[in-house]
Image (tube, rainbow over all chains, first blue to last red; front, side, top):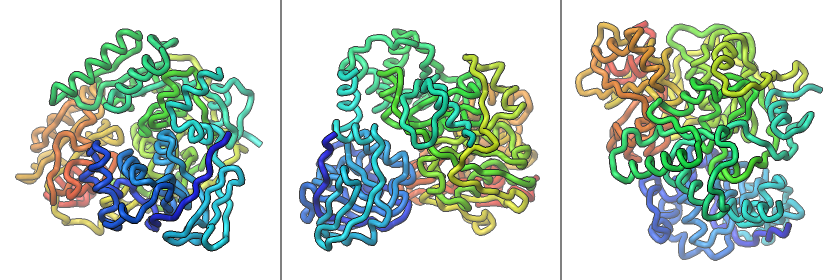
Length: 170
Length: 418
């Protein structure tokens, strides 16, 4: 039970409600499997210079029902390759949530997050205190606690290591 | 306080007397269902052996595999995937259903929709088994847990109750009821919850119509949908049931996170415009919009009700020259019944292309659209690129609207043909 806090800058804010994450790489690129090629395509329609600005450990922020539609895995594979460490959103669509947690990619549901942070603020997601803190502005908000299984899965690094680890326990 | 049908089912499969929304339990699914698809089943089969040392599943009758995508195969690679699936099923003694139709429909036909059962799949459209009082969830890649363990971890969901009231007008179908729910309740209204449908208006919705509504539940944010099965649903499900389970029902004083009353009286045919299933509009706003193609089929539609109304619209009429109308019955059982009723002959004589059941039209693997093309569809989804080019467009609507639009080569109101 030692899931590490996320600490990084808000590299981008997707303010669209029901955001379809496939738009991050563009649907025409969704079948690309080469990670470098995917990373090249990522964020081109939002901020073409994104790749040069983002740092390892940065996070992205989303609006309500983030991940609605028919989410595929490549967009967030690309974002992780660029250094993104997790997503904080007002709320998430369940299919997207489950898919990314199973990849070991941290997601934090924090009602009010859009009012708490602006792009490039430094934030911390504290899994113990269940709190998101804006370190730049010195404000914070509670977030919704992870379920036990989701917490364990993130801590293990995804579905496969989670199942392997708990198999050993059993 | 009482319990919802979902809570009762999850209590039974967790070996507990009662569970409440919010509890985390270890549940043993009655059935684990999947269709073969690259990145899912082929990966599971490999991981079971290599990562977990599982050579054979312990209770093969709890598993069911369908081959309904990439049917028929169009490349050696696709056929190789199917061969791998057939081999695994034979080695494991797991039932395999191939070329019988779209699995979510066939699963009901062959008795996996046991009232009171808990079923998991990776694909969320399995929720349509909820028509029969089965709690069926799509859990994406986490389905691996159900392949390597007897039990899966699950948080008992809250339930949103929707009570239907009133009477459906001519030309308005179950699909419109579902799209109306997304429109009025919102695409996040049931997030992480169960959508439970009931009320006096249920007598307006056929069993097939309920399969349509429950099968699309994910677009309200729900993780599944369920119905307290009445005599008609039980009469379908119980004689086919592969397992004896006592059906359960929500208590009158069950705790719901929200209760909504939805009036069917004034509902009109609807259309869901691209590029998201949240974009519900009145069909009347889009009459005359030019089209290239129409698709009537999928696990959401393509059943007898849909084929019947399409035949009624198309009888003695012709599909507009140049318009591509693809009609794909959801299962072999449905296709045979539609043939006996004469619907298929009427639809073919009108100029439609009728195919045997397959999932492949719904995701653009065949009948693929190119940029700037536009279709009306009873498929599940209208996101960019779903049926081909990301620059083609999909307008979701009911089966009668697809048929009427095929006659005019443009979005048309079906009511004038009925």
